[in-house]
Image (cartoon, rainbow, N blue to C red):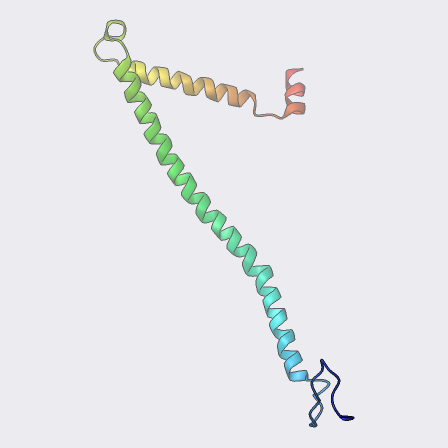
Length: 125
């Protein structure tokens, strides 16, 4: 039992020692690591930008279509509920006028708020 391996470690079989410097494998690993790093730094941001452009364009198109449909629905709703006794039989002009005034007031409020806090104080002086 003098030659028995200590418990917990398998006995070492005789054979050639492992090469200390396996330069082909190290070179391949280095090339793979560099290519992966370059790909992650270039492709990742490019994919993020491309997704943002595609989703942003889609959101703008769908949002514009929804806005147009909403305005049409509002004009028709206002036209349906305007009293004939006040505006006459044909009062589509009144629906356009009312909705136009709403948009003009909203635009004026947004136009007034277009400057930041410091700019607004300088403009008001």
